[in-house]
Length: 338
Ligand SMILES: Cc1ncc(COP(=O)(O)O)c(C=O)c1O
Image (cartoon, rainbow, N blue to C red; front, top):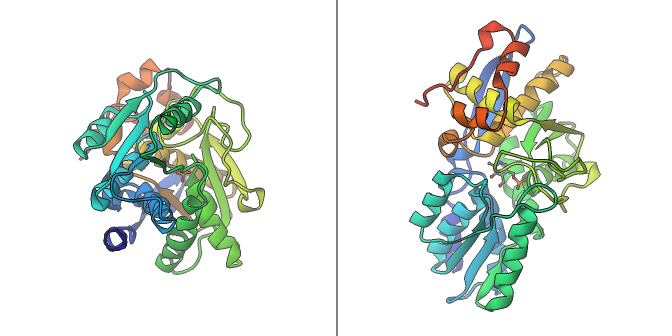
């Protein structure tokens, strides 16, 4: 099993950092994008899956015949399904209606079992319902092993050991500010810990969506997958966070489209949120110059959501208001992905 884990590790990381230029209050500002969609399985969650499963293997919990199980809104599921194939074990994903159609069919292609929950929890999301379903399945058969991305320290730890150092290696100097989306909080917590433990003064900015309670916040309806949570993160310690920002669905969608139109880079929804937060931060802090956004995945899984005008209209997300805020040149209807 170690051999297969080692092979999987060689497929991770060294994702590109690409500069884009966006107009921020009439000034052309450069934003570095770390494009995590270039990982195997198409997202930063390939690193998370590797860290989590390696931890379970080291504890002796993964043997032939076991079935990994996890509550996932999509990307971690894809990564775990791929890893499970490498290791020759089974995998069941517990999903909810916010996971995209594209994601579900890819999971099926990878041979994962899928269990759907469709009742929202009291916080307005599905996380608590998904976790309840995982517990029910674990109690029904001891072949199941829970990966537990929300509780396992291996989640932030892999980003402290792998993602943080990789970012620093790729930059000529540490950025003035770094932006990352929060769901479990593992990516942000691990990268921030690495920067802070190394005495760097980079301002670490966590990006969440309105309606998420990952770090305080008022619960509410959320529409984007991959970002936000309906329960507090166990990894987001105060000392790791210099600034915490909330982004709405329309703003995230606007920046997905804006970056595609202006720079030809196709970002996923949480990355649109991260870029939106970064632009707002640059508006409020015009003195800072080098900024880096961790972009967790690419846009291919979001054609039916943030790149779809009818979807935005249906959920009442007004990207036209974003156009107005940024002037007539900014108008963005859904561009055709290249
Ligand atoms: C697209 C996307 N962005 C951001 C995140 C947030 O990552 P984390 O759970 O490490 O906070 C996830 C997690 O699933 C994701 O799928």
